[in-house]
Image (cartoon, rainbow, N blue to C red; front, side, top):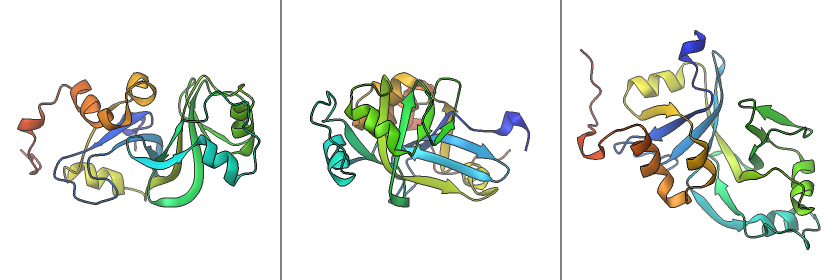
Length: 187
């Protein structure tokens, strides 16, 4: 796979025809994509939890935190009990996957403690679980017309309300939803 084929730091946007309940009408940020597979975080499906609940579950004192109402997302069906923090800037956390020079995804407790102390990253999105694809699987799904893809947009990721991210991501690509077909176009 050449570098031009990699979808790291791209949005995967579920086509209207994708009926898998884990991914119907979702936008997934691809955090890592290589010949070994892909890993991403769904960014537009909310849980009933907030940062307060995460602090309680992890026994972190968040009494002074200014972001207790930060929502928690369903990041995907894999390891749905594991927490992920998408954040900007990358920072120097104990366990961080660098998506870009500015964006990272961390899984270590230290980033949550920093959020509790109001010294965490400027922008972040919390998620439980992730989406994963085996080698070649994501490429097959795209060829089968399950997904649209395009460069990630940090405004959509961090500033657009979760319920508006799917349509905003589609619009960002310049695609007319009414014109989308469930049939793959093969010339």
